[in-house]
Figure 1 (cartoon, helix red, strand yellow):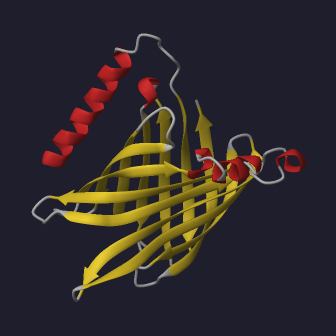
Figure 2 (cartoon, rainbow, N blue to C red; figure 1 turned 180 degrees about the vertical axis):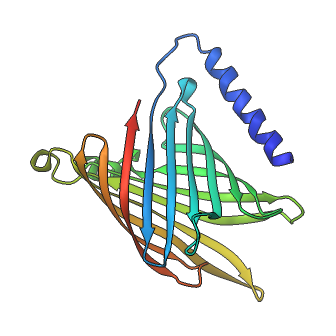
Length: 236
């Protein structure tokens, strides 16, 4: 309940901040809906949403509904909600607050960290911008969970996307993905477990893409799999 209360408070703060913007600007972003079948014998519906608000706030969320292999019922739910705000107008760093929801009891998290936008960093950014590549790294410095002790430096998220051969393929092809590097304590030792997804998509109709995705999940009994399906994207 504390996590939900904090989430709704954050939502109110963002709405209030937007209403106080003296020079109103248009909110921009996207939503995409992805339906996959995974070769590990389950299906996934993923919904991603990103919005750039006035006053430099940014919201990003992903929600995975995982279907069981034997029925059409949802087996697992995983969702991340991120609220970001730039450290300054000059530095390519953002404060990040992340709210994680999972299936099950007492396993939701609140994380605080910083996102580093490498694409907007001098020297490195010039090369990435030239090739139309976006890359970011987001260390999660502290994690809070109900009925659990506070954890430090729990995860680093890496994200990338780019569209090669834009002129030849008329912006139809893209590559995108992420890698979550998770730090865990096992037998008094720090171990690393990865969750990664690397996707290629090709537009077959306006806003509709055929997608193929290679996945690794060190928390799963079947570590790797191949997902394929469709994506529909709405830009606003």
